[in-house]
Every structure is written in structure tokens, then in C-alpha cells.
Image 1 (cartoon, rainbow, N blue to C red):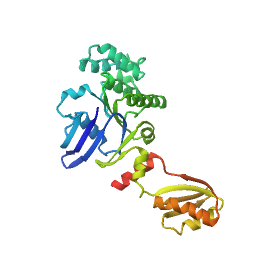
Image 2: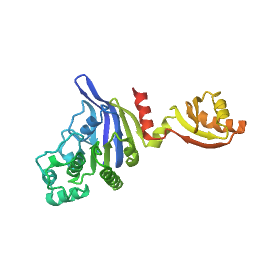
Image 3: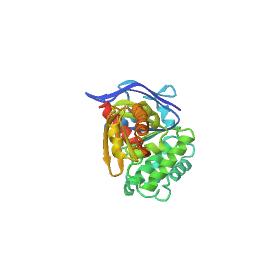
Length: 304
């Protein structure tokens, strides 16, 4: 199934939370990136049909989501805020979700959902006794209980220990590979890079970028790139590079050079040419900022 947003905005009085966002979320795993206050939660709640757009439309396979109770059969939402009643056991909470969906066998559905998130052993304990990570997992179980083709997760990894986090990452990847449409937000950018096939970036309520990590980098050829270089003569290479405008800054350290290339294509041509002309051997040329966090930070600054 496919969620489409067309010129969607949401404001609260004079505060604009989401501003004219157009995007399509299809099958597979999509990561939603953005700093705190970027509008990610607002966007997810509009996609889930729990919040009305102030402007624009949100549709699921061409059908409007707002005020359409039928979409809840197809969507599972894991909100960032705690939505779990502490006096219930994990079993009671997930079973209640199964019954609310009117499933033909709610007991079996609840059992299967709890097993999927590895919460069978503590299912009879009250939710108020759970750790943050356990509460997250029982929320995921409740969202999965009706086996929805669309899953929306808001900061699902919060509070999970490393083993729990890896298990949920594997689960998300496997569900995406099986054809489910999954959108999840996370402030841990390494997790998004490892799990998501596609990335949407939201900054100050605006849609800042779209694509996979490599596509976003290719679209940003004007972005300064930082390289680490080791050569047979670092000092002479540094002096030669500083004569060209494509190298915006060069620093010499005990482990070689760090060069900030302000014009990527120009620097890619410059470096081998200078090395050849000066008779310098290049031992190592490696990017120092190829991680997703550096790309994300650049997008935030560019959109500020």
C-alpha cells in the first residue's frame, strides 16, 4: 500500500508544525529524519488519520485518511508518547487491541504479536513494572496485532537495550522485505542508515530532501567534502593544493592531510593532477564525512 501527502500543512494557532509537504511512502522501509521539533510526530499522526491536515490531503491508496475509520484496518501506529495503561498486563493490553480490531481470533493474534517482539515471558506482568524498552516492545506488539500492511513508528528504538534494538531492526527489515510499507523516525541516525532503504528529511516542518543516502549525497555536489590524505610528501602536497580554489582549507597533522573540498568535481580532478605534476605518491585518500549524520547536519543548516 502507498501513503501520499499532497501539499500538506498543519498549524496550531500561529505555529506552523508542518509546511507544504508533498511525499510518497511506498512498500519497503523508509526512515524519517529531522531534529526535535521538525514536525515528524505531527506528520506521522496525520498519516495515521489521528490528526487533520490544516491544508492539503493525506491518502492511502487514493482514499483520504482523515475521518475514514476503515484505514485503521490497514495501519498500525507506534506513537512516541506513552500510550500504555500501566494497570494492565502486557497480555491484556495487546489482547484489548486485538479485540478492538474485531479480529476473528483475538487470543491467537495477541499471542503471535507478543511472540514477534519477544515479550512472551513478561506478558503477565503489569505494564507499569516494565522498563522503557519493554514498554516500547509491547506498543509495537499492539500495533502489529492485526497484521497491518502499513506500519508507522515514531522513535521506536527509544529506551531499548542493544539486543532489543538489533532484534527490532531485524524485524523492521524483514517486514519491509515482505512488502509492508514501513515509515519510522529515529534520532539515532546510524540506525536509520542501517535499516532504511529510503530516507525522507524534515527540517523546520519542511521537506528538505528525499532519496537513499547515496542519492542525497549525489544531489549535494555543492556540499563541502572533507578528505583525509596520506602521501609521500604531505607538506609539499598541501602547499600545491592550497593554490587552487576547489580546496577551501588544508590542515597538516601527524596522520596526514585533512582537505575541505568546496567544489567536489573540481577537487576530484585536481588531486591526481597535482600529485602527478609534483611527483608525489598518494598512499590514502578517504572521505572523512561519509556518514549519514554529516549529511543530515548539512541539510539542517542549509534549510535554516
